Length: 102
Image (tube, rainbow, N blue to C red):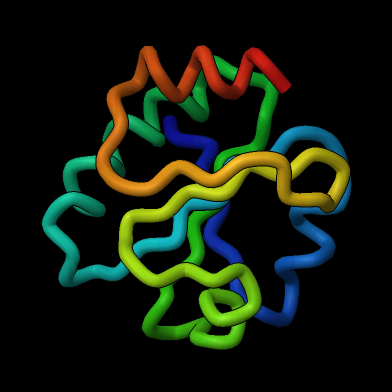
């Protein structure tokens, strides 16, 4: 079962404040986002990092705050601070390698 967490502007800061967190900025209508979803579901079962999803249509303030201009965009946070940005569809092995490097 997936451990992916869906969050919004109200709870975002609380969700990302501790440890390594990979935030996926997505939209329901985005084809590459739909292709990325099962990859993130699998990844959430295999890593200690949190995998979090933010719907850009429902949370435009977060998209603006982090400069998300295209989706999917993933931002890695460590203890609440952004440490990396990954744009586009990325395969599971590449994401796993990135997460293990933080």
